[in-house]
Image 1: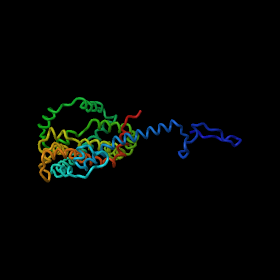
Image 2: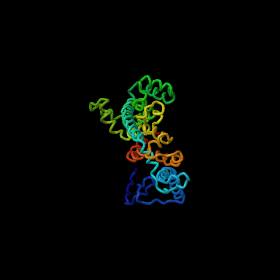
Image 3: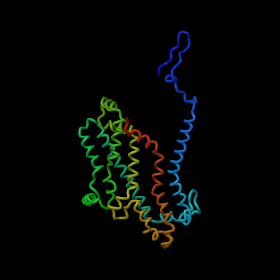
Length: 319
């Protein structure tokens, strides 16, 4: 910004609007159109917030309400009555706790393996001096459009003796190509090449540069990739549906589906229950299952939201 010079008479010349420094404490003059736009933005934001929050609020209220009121559609904003029978029917099923433990193991173990494999691979593919990187990236990308299918995968996993094992949940999804491309874009656009040159002058090799410089500067993208992988493992039910027959190592989603279908709810509950009662509590069971399956993600997300937002924007394409 150009500075104004004082004339010989001691009077400063008039500065243009571009030269006037911005002072946030000075209120700018707002026109009628500015107020209209602000009101429209507020209304739109409140409407979007309501559309997002109300379904979650309704599920919470309905899960604690009287089942007959839920079946009649009397629950809208506040709970009608108070009943925990739906939660009781879900939590008294021992399979829920088995599924919770299995899903936690698959999610934590699988996410750790995913991050350990994806981040170094993305860093290697981001280095211009790595000559085969374009060929390898093409091979990775090719798998996004053309896959073997369920039957070839089933035959492959059977030959590898991975069916009905923990490894079928972890090893086949060790690398997600979409996450790999996001991390590669981050390393190419957000890590200055001057840092690598400076590290070479200090005697660091690629391993030292990666672990001592790149990793500390990549906390945002690592948090994003970790969240993506964790959600993917937590919501994975297809693997258990196709490749698993042993219910002792099934994930939580398969057990919740089994309860929702009513195959085990009656036999594992504290008391006997006929078909009419099961139908009466069907909605409460459904809402309770939704909260049980999403609660861990709702607890984790607020703690990494700032990293999530920053990582997505940093890894975006810049024009």
